[in-house]
Image (cartoon, rainbow, N blue to C red; front, side, top):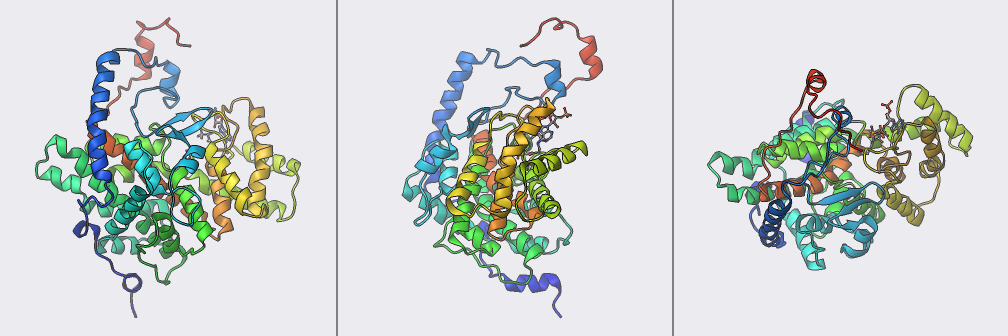
Length: 467
Ligand code: CMX
């Protein structure tokens, strides 16, 4: 009888490993576009620093040092900017603007992650041909080395999918162009190019890693389709997960676009940036970011939301429920010392536009029943309850409040997997930023920490209050 590992390795079509395939060939023209964009931005940064370098960007209070450094402006991230009331803008474009302006695959309605990645990298909306070129390039770069498949297949069933993702990406680090070039003595001016190669290869394979994790855990034994060169990134991912519905592929496009980037200070982006600042290669840095995304106050909240929704349905039944019943359940949850998952945000102060666009997708395409209805009804109930606590700075829903119920509608019910999909999307933003970190020559990150004793004893700045 075949062992579990041997059995799995037989059922997956073999494909060339990307490191021996097209790496270095600029199929899409993105690398050439970056080579044009980088010197301009390097000049711009030089100018800004010459003119404004000694101006104060923020004053920091003692409280901010104790409370997670909220709002301290101390990082440069070029790919996106978060406004507390408006939400995220990717290179200046809001989510509705991206939905309007970014190109998509024939027959689809939502923009592709390929188009979004081009935007994040270059600051320009790609043409249809550039977007299609990127699809072709990512498909050509796809192909896991055998040892990574073996590593994934050896993970135990009780290992959380996010731990599997992080560990599998570390296994793929054997292919790092940056690490191998650095080891053989790389000129600083070549850093961004080597980082670019790693970013492109990692993105081209992270959905394959993620699909394999899903299949191993939830649909063992069935054949995983290989990459179909006629399909875009999102549809390939959907099919590898085992979903052939065209509308699900469109949801994937929306999902992968909206979860991609949320400026630089959130845990996954900041962890990636911090680790990359030590010149750790993109595999090491992204894996670190995924460990942060796996926390329940960050990406894992989408898993927590679905558990919360399922618990509500189990207790209240599948039939109609009143707002009063929901309010009581939310109050019970808060009384047990837990948070209401999917609500609140460290920066946002209004409903997250990533929630709104998913709500619109549901209204446009799906029957508003079951969990979708429950999510929409909670939106009427939860903000008032959180406001009533008097301490929650943002009582409105974030991205994680909505994503799970859409996935359940299409049959992707295994909530422990949801953060992995968030992670596939987040690769686009954090890896685009890592390329720019290297292009701009951003140095090792090393803020100063102090002790409480130091705070008490260093009086020279006491008396000055920052409003
Ligand atoms: N339910 C209950 N209490 C909440 C709450 C929520 N959804 N959101 C905030 N609070 C509480 C905080 O726990 C804090 O309480 P204490 O003072 O007793 O510690 C108080 O309100 C003030 O917190 P805040 O300044 O409004 O929020 P923070 O910036 O500290 O935290 C966040 C932000 C997201 C961690 C928090 O709102 C939360 O825990 N939300 C639920 C988890 C969640 O949905 N996370 C996903 C965020 C999006 C993402 O990163 O993916």
